Image 1 (tube, one colour):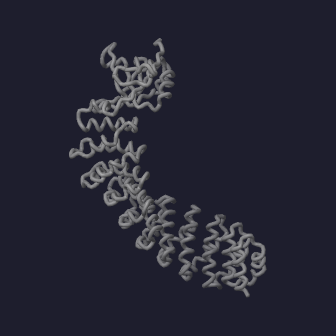
Image 2 (image 1 turned 45 degrees about the horizontal axis):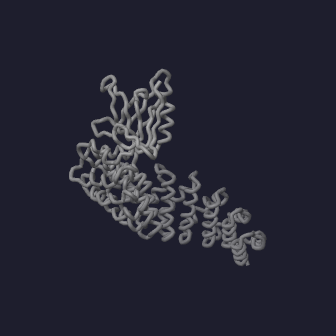
Image 3 (image 1 turned 180 degrees about the horizontal axis):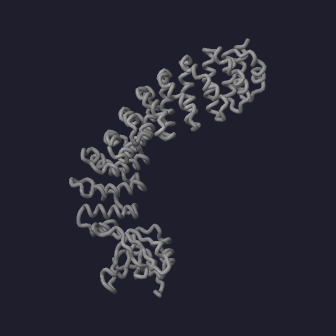
Length: 465
């Protein structure tokens, strides 16, 4: 059995393994548990150097490799009678393999090293090979890759290194988004190219940077927007995610692409949920500018192929528009009322709230849905009861005779747990002058815990008088 040997740096000496790189620690592994403990202790190691007997080189021949990372292949440990092995990711450009399997008993020495980035790329003979090495390094240890190295590979006339350099930059942006900001000018230039085929990783970098600081990618919306209609749905969604990040920061920066968003929603393509969300952000900031897309949102809310979350966002966006101009909701009323039957509580409640907004001006067109609203006044959900009772109270103000059949329910709601429901009940009873509810209203005006409810009950009593 091989004797266990551990090495670590001390104040007087520095271990120099075969590759000549300063080492933090080293090991000649005795067994899998010995190696596993070592790897656990140095889980954040920037790199490894391994020396092992390589059968491909001949019996007794040893090789040393610089590695991005190393891991035990656990199934080889668990199978009785099988020699445990490790999977290594060596630093070597194509055509060298990305992984190499080494038997555990062939390892002579393994050390933790911290070579600078140029050491990793020294074996690369071309820019494309350098990009591949940097991508492998970024995959294993993104903190060790310099953004400037990747910018230099991207800012070239030849496109050979582009794919791997962008993949590496994407990996960096996932953990170091702020550090990738200097790459934005070259990414902008790439996105402007008509034949740019690596848009997805470029947009992924922008998304990570934009999530951290959306103002940094806001000036690039014009370059990002064309990719929101790309034939590749993953590219399309990544572009829309970038635009959504900008919209969260300042919707005004994306308002010019609203027609494109509406087209995406209409054409039933993947990415509609992002398009709806961005329209929601625009509607909150400027309902007037999004009014032309109300019909698109109206169709979206009843589209069963969309997720409930997307449909919910569509109702919220439509609510912003209808709240600004209730007339916009009149042609959509039939579609909105369809949602009264859905199981999703929030979606149903938003639909009732939309009808309530329309009723602020157009009780004449909402009045026909009294039976549906009457049923919703006793639903368990507080907000559904609030909106349904408020809508019927509005109708009662203009068409009191048609709402009298709801008197018993309104009286029942005077005891509701939610004060807004009790307030609406007083409003409704006062609107159609429900004289047979006088005693209940008088008790409410004296004993209700909420001052707004007591005030509304007194108003209702004054209407009866």
